[in-house]
Length: 182
Image (tube, rainbow, N blue to C red; front, side, top):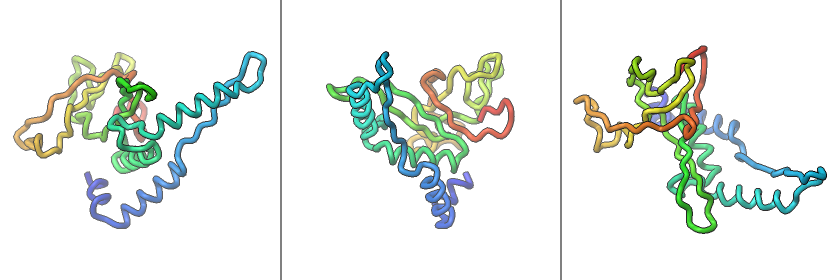
């Protein structure tokens, strides 16, 4: 909470986060496909097709279609640095002709309830784990718990959660201890 407060109210914190994001993300993800034929020579046509598909995807990888890839990288990096973690849900989508049927939905850490602990189901801080401690699924709020429509947290009212399988979620986090969940 303090990190977010500083990000919203301190020019120094904003500048530090901006510089860190610039130095970590740089110019962003770039790819150069290097597929080869069985003969060992470069598969130029395939490589060009892959590069074209990447360019098409990276123009609007966000589930809303509003955020280009380079900006999405910066927003994800900033959330990770400020909050210590960020979740990214991988979403298959029904795509119009010419669009890839895949998008990303980054989620701030608030979307996974930290205070949700259910030992019977193996849930620790909103993450369902197997007996080895591997995440198998995540509880994810259907809406941000701080939105005005759901800001009745003082009364103990929270938005509902859905279960998202671990195969559909990336959890990027700072890890400082073994067996750390969040």
